[in-house]
Image (cartoon, rainbow, N blue to C red; front, side, top):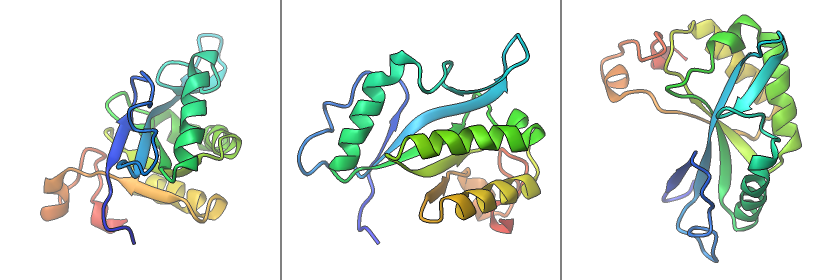
Length: 166
């Protein structure tokens, strides 16, 4: 196990030149944030922030993440956060999970998932998601960041479930 972890949350996409150097201090980049939903025409989507992950706006992001990987930095994809991401995923699980799986398979620089659950979900749905990720990507990092109170007192976190029950 690594002795230190310095995690860089990357959402504003202003470039990574500051950390992309030999012997980087940063150990992990958490690319933020994936959301699922339906377009006005009824087509389901997976978005990185507000655009499809392969939108040309992200070309330099993917190039930088590949370089980060070559420097030994682990890239983790964050789902959710304050903008949601789980309601549609769990209501349309098969299709939405397939979109996620295709994204992860396409971008080999991604070696993990950060499940930032800030909306009410069932623990069974979270268990299914974790199980499917472990089955499809057995060496993936699976990260979560529950609020301290929910771990200390075994109270439901922002997702409405008790993390220790996972």
